[in-house]
Amino acid sequence: MSRPPFEVADLVRTAGSAFIERNRAWIRWSHIKVLLAIVRCRTAALGGHIDECVRCGHRAAISYNSCRNRHCPKCQTGARERWIQARRSELLPVPYVHVVFTLPPQLAALALQNKKVIYGLLLRASAETLLQVARNPRHLGAEIGFFSVLHTWNQKLQLHPHVHCVVPAGGLSLDHTRWIRSRPHFFLPIQVLRRVFRGKFVAGLKSAFQHDQLHLSGDLPLLAQPKIFAAWLRPLFRKDWIVYSKPPFGGPDYVLQYLGRYTHRVAISNHRLVSLAYGQVTFRWRDSAHNNEPTRMSLSLDEFLRRFLLHLLPKGFVRIRNFGFLANRRRSALLPLCFAALGTVPSQIELETSPTQESDPLWRCPQCGGPMAVIERLSAAQLQLRSPPLLVTDAA
Image (cartoon, rainbow, N blue to C red; front, side, top):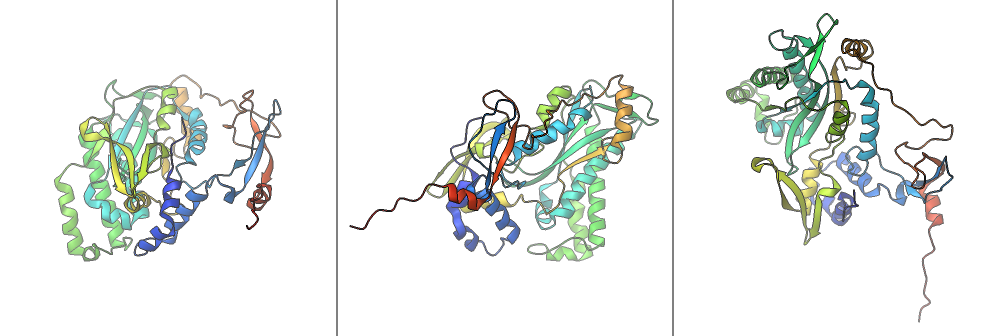
C-alpha cells in the first residue's frame, strides 16, 4: 500500500500545544500521552536500530522505533499480523459467521463517562448472549467458541460502541463427543439474540448502578437518583437493539484475512485522510445508509482531534477477547476435541528459527526475502550524534 500524503501525526503537529490549551476543560494527561506518542512514533525521538539479513548479509538503513501505542495508526499493522499468525492454529475447517452487537445511541454519553464499565459489560453481555442461545437445543444445542473485538467508532469518528464476533458456524456437542453444524445459510435467530442481549446488558447496567460503579457527571447527575435512573432505562426496552449477522462465509484461510479488517483497527487510518487546508481536515468515509457509498467529510482540526480522542480506551482494557471453547482457560482442553470431532488436526505455523533473529519476523530482506535481525540499537542521543552538522554561515 502506498504511503499516505499525510498522517494523524502531522495533524497533531499542526495543532500543536495550542490545541491542548484551547481544550483544557476536558483534555486529560491520558489524551496528551497518546498525542505525544503518535507525534514521536518512528522518529529519532524514540531511538532506532539497524537490521541485517541473516541469510545474505544485506544491511538496511537506520529504522526509527515505533511508539507501540495501541491508538497509533502506524503501529497496528505489525501487531495485527502477529496476532493473526498466533490464531492460525486455532481456526477450524468450517465456515465462519460474523455477528455484530451495537449499543443504542442513548447510551453514548453514559459510555463516554464509564468506558471501562460499559465496554466491559458490552463484551460480556454479547458473549453470554451467543453462548446461551447457541446452547439452547431449539437453536443449535452446542458449545461454541469465538473471538470478540470492541470498536467504539463509526465512519464519521462519532461514538458508536459495538462488538464484532467471529464465530465458527457450529459447535461442540454438550457432551463434547461430536461437532454440530449450523444450517447452511443460518446460524442463530436474530430476534432471539436481540432480546437476550438487551436483557443481559440492562441487567448488568442495573447491577453496576446498585453497586455505585457508574460515574454520573456533566449532563447525567440526575441519574444518580434511583427512580430517575429506572425511568431513564425504561425506554430502552421499547425498541429492538441492533444485532447483525452475516450468513456463514469462507474457511480458515479467508477468515485470517477477514479478521485483519477488525482486530487492530484504530478510529481512523492514515490512508483515509485526504487533505488539511485552511484548518479543515478532509477524510473519506462510507455511508452505510446508501450502500456504503464512498464520500468525504470535512471537520475543523480541533473537532477532528476531539473525535479521535473519544476512542481512547482505559489503561489495561482488553479489547480483543476469546470466549467459549476458545477461552484462555478452556482452549487447551476443548479445542483438540473440536478438531477430533471434525476429523482433522490443527495447522502448524512454520517459523523461521535462527539464534540471531531478534526482530519482527514480518520484516524481510528486500534482496533475498530472508529474515532481518537487529544488529545494533541506537538511542535518541546516539542518533543525534550521527546527524549531519547544521551549516553555519559567516555573518556579513
